Image (spheres, rainbow, N blue to C red):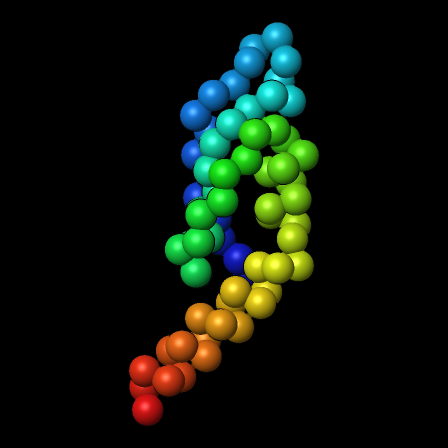
Length: 65
C-alpha cells in the first residue's frame, strides 16, 4: 500500500476544482506539485509510482551488500 502526504496551499472557494499543492510519496520521498484536482488524481493514480518503489528497493539491496 502506498502512503502520501498531500499539502494543499491554495483553494478557491467558488471554484473547488482549482487547488494547488504538493504530493509527497512517503516511500520514495518524491514530491510532485499539482495545480488542480485532475493533476492531483493523476499523480495519485499514476502507474509511474510503482517504478519508483522498485528503484528504492534496488537501492536498499545495493546498500545492504
